[in-house]
Image 1 (cartoon, one colour):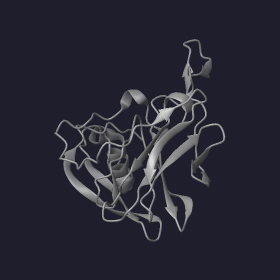
Image 2: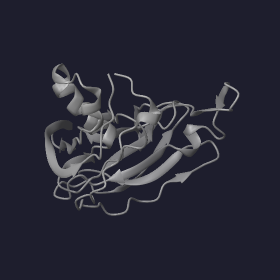
Image 3: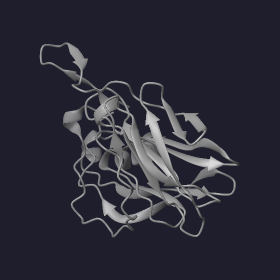
Length: 229
């Protein structure tokens, strides 16, 4: 159901509830070829190792292990005359991030979080990937792309979960999809204040899996949805 950018639902005006914040991630470095490097604590041994991602080969490497990951090569921009060209520097050099995260401090070892704009359209959402060492091999255990417009950040509160509080686009479209058969009055939709939920995924370090949990309710609502057809 396409919705024009100018009809974007208003953001919630109610302050967001407190969200647990993870400890600052080790700093990442970037060389002249755009290769990102950070430090990650390995499961089992607890040793520190260098982790790097090459945006050209799309490979994430930790020690002698490597895995292919998704990387958007370019972020395009309109030059005002209807033509598109690569954004200076490209998304591979300026927008890709790599960070070590500790999903569950009770389980030794860290995981690697990759974030990047999801595409080349205006105000793209964020593509997230989580890489973990499973049975001695690197594995992409979770990949998620936010919906709507703009950044769609996630948090790692340290309880074994990944969390994301819906933006207004996500909340309004989820509500619309639920009650669409009953939605016949556009003016009514334009006045609708959708409840904003929190998406939660649970990480199982032993199995090396990430599974979605039921949507959590928050006390937030959008100002209005302004959805039409």
